[in-house]
Each structure stands twice: as C-alpha cells, then as structure tokens.
Length: 299
Length: 289
Image (cartoon, rainbow over all chains, first blue to last red; front, side, top):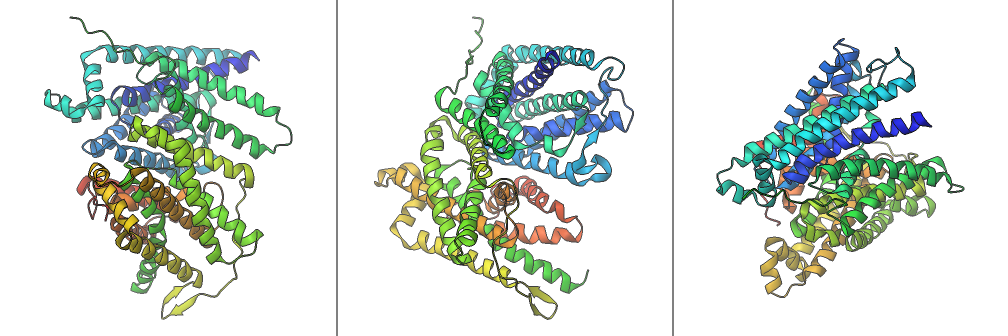
C-alpha cells in the first residue's frame, strides 16, 4: 500500500510537470497544444533509446529529451506562428499521431508496438523496489520544484507579462514593439522541452514504454489537470495534477463496485468520465480552483 | 514501377480522395460557419459507421439504407451534442471549444466502446470479383463507394447553391454580422450546419466500414487525413475540401511507391506542414463557397 501511494505521488509529479509545461503556452501565452502527448512520447523515446542502447547516463538522456522536443516545438510554433490558433491545434494533434505512428513502425529503432523494456532508472536494481520508489519520488519532486520555480519567475517577470499580452491581444503586443513571433516560438519550445523531460522521467520510472502509452487520452488528463487547477496559475497546475491522479484512482475503485460490467466496459466508463469531467469544468468553472491572479505591477 | 502500376495507384487515390472528401466537407463546413476546428467529426464518423453497421447486419438492409440511416443518426447526434456540449463553450473562444470537442470525441468513442466493445466488425457484403480494364483493376465496392460519395457531394453543392437555407449558410460563413443584420437566424444556421456536417461525417464512417472493418477508433484513425484535406484545400472552403481530399488521396497512394503502407496517414501531416509553410491559406483560399 505504501508503495502504491508513493507510485501515485510519482505519477502526480509527472502530470504536474506536463501541466506546468502546458501552462506556459496555454495558460500564459494562449497557444494551444492538443498533441502534448507527442512531445511527451518523443522525450520518453529519446531518453530511453539513448540510455538503453547508447549507454548514455540518465542525465544525458534527460538533456537529449529536452533538446529534441524543444527543437520540435520550435519548428511547429514557427510554422503556425503567423496563423490563427486553430492551425496550431490541428498541427499539434497531427504531430502526436505521427510520433505514435513512427514509434509503432520503426521496429529496428523502437521495437514497434512491443515497446522498449529495461529502461534504466536511478539506482534501480541496486536498492529494494521500495527504496527505488522513494528515490524516484525525490527526483520527480525536485524536478517539479525546479520547473515550478522557473515558471513562477517567468510569470512574474516582464517576459511573462509579454506572454500574457500576446495571449490577450497579439496585435497590441506587436504594436507595443514586442517581437511576437520570437516570444511565441521561445515559449512553445521551452514548454515542449518540459513535456519531453516529463516523458523521459516517465520511461526511467516505469522502465517500459510503448506506443500505447502515448494516446490522446493522456493529453486530456493534462488539459483537465490544468483547467481544474487554474489555467494561468502554476500552483494550480500542480494542484490539478494531484487531483486528476486522485480522481483517476478513485474511479478505479468506484468502477470495481459496478456489477456485471466487462473489463472493456469498465475501461470505457473510466475514460468517458475523464472527458465528461473536463467538459463539466470547462462549463462550470473554467477558471479552475486557483484562478489566475495577475501579479501586481510595482508602481 | 511501371506506368500501369502508377496509373493504378492514381485511380485508387482518386477513389479514396472522393470518399475522404465527404467527412472533409463536414469538418470544413463547421469551420466556415462556427469558426472552430470541430475534432468531434472523428467520433461522429464512428457513430455513423456503427449506425450503418446495425442497419446492415442486425436488420439486414442494403448498404444504401445504411448510408441514409448513418447520415440521419450522426447528424442528429451532431445537433444534440453541439447544443448540449459545445454551444455553451463557444463564448469562451474557438480554442476552448476545440478542447471541448476533443473531450467530447473521447466521451462519444467510449459510449460506442461501452455498447459494442473493441472488436473489429465488418459489414455484411457480397463478395465480388474486381473489374479489369487492361492493367487497371477496380472493385465494385470501390465504385459503389465512389458513387455514394459523389451523390453526397452533389447534394451538398445543390443545397448550397440552390436553396434559401444554403444561401443563408454561405452568408453566415462570409460575414456573420452582416447576415444577422439581414435577419438570418444564426442559431438555426448553426444547427443545420451541424446536422449536415456531422451527417456527412457519418456517411464517411459508413464508407470506411464498407471498405474495411470498424471499431470505436475508426473515425479517429482517418482524422489526420480529414484535417489535411481541409487545410490543404483551405480551411473553411467547401470546394477546397474536395480538391484537398483528392490531393491527399492521390498523395497517400503514391506514397506507397517509397514508404511502408503504415505511413500512409503521415502523408497528411507532411502535406499540412508543406501547405502551411508555402501557401498558408490553402490551395483555394478560405472563402466558404
């Protein structure tokens, strides 16, 4: 039971990273990313392959994941930066499907749908599984705190103010002399990098990744976490991530009590509930539990 | 690769593109009138595919009846879902509505999964021998699908060009404020657009079912090609969606010359990237009609 709780806390930390990454683009800059699971998957595969096949240390894998997903994010933002946000929605959703397609088909590299197993984790095998869990929770919590600190810094800085200006009206930001394109591309690249690191950590924690892990439903989890927590609010992103994990695990137990359902029906109910919750939050409390409060400007 | 084989791929691509045009028109029409990318086209195609499946296998009707039922069921579902789920989100902006549409599509997929399970299902169809002209082969089912898609498309164009309601739709797509001043009821136009567009998505679902098998992810699997068709032709342009779909259909088939068949859907993504880089408004621009 202890191990279970620790594992859930680790997953909550990873969701928190994803929600923080999403918050930078969607919450602060108003750019949508409906394919964040694609960046998450790209990071996971990059780090898993580098450490498992290339013998690179785990930290090297994380850096590679950060760089690769950052570049992918920058390219996508550059292509769509001058267009309406709808195009970014389409292109990111498409990107995540292509990542899954490549992961399923380049068997020589990714082992196809069988996935990659035996991904190294910090001190895995040298300590008991319980201790490994605790170590990893420490690592994940540390990364979350680091990213949270950076994001808070961004939020309260002039840089964050420009991002919010772009979100509210990018023409006004441009008229004020801000290089809108550059801000958009940078924010999207950094956000994608955070998503990639979260994916890399996921692989090092579970030791196994496969294309099935990176389904669109995961994107919905993260959007739900951020929306429920408070779009635009970094603490909200973290809170929302923990709530989503709690909620998902809750439905696991709750659906156990439903009599006479087949396994596939139970799975359908749980997935459906995630979608319905997001729709309810969007409708009834779009600002989330911790609504964004604009930082006070020193006068 | 002989010219004959390439001609065969082009023919297959034109047939596939014509079929793809049906849901692509739906996607782009909703974009033209309501100004947001409605990703729920995917789940409505699935709903249509399963509605047609029930009519065809459990009730024993022909493929033609399945198409009509799929149009009505998916269209009605589209109006209902839009009214209950997406319409209240629209004031929050196009992107929030788009997020809602993704959530909606996941909910609907799981409703289908709850009822029918994850198994692959096939329509009940007679097995027919391919027709052959020289080196070109074409299946009677392909021809039938082509016919259904063409009838649906001609219906759309006649409706938009010839009826008062069609004109009202084009007016709202062109300029919602001006249309409102002329006394056009935007809500009514939105409902009709949803009915027609999601109905077309439903027909698209049946056409997929007639071609292969169906499961709860049927609609989602083609969504990338549908987006690509709409973006390549010009998001919001109905003739553009047709041109885009034919382009994507042929490109996907020709990609078989150098790529594994499983990468067929990636062609759409590459096409989106190319078009957005070189000609962001699409081949025909964004005018609705």
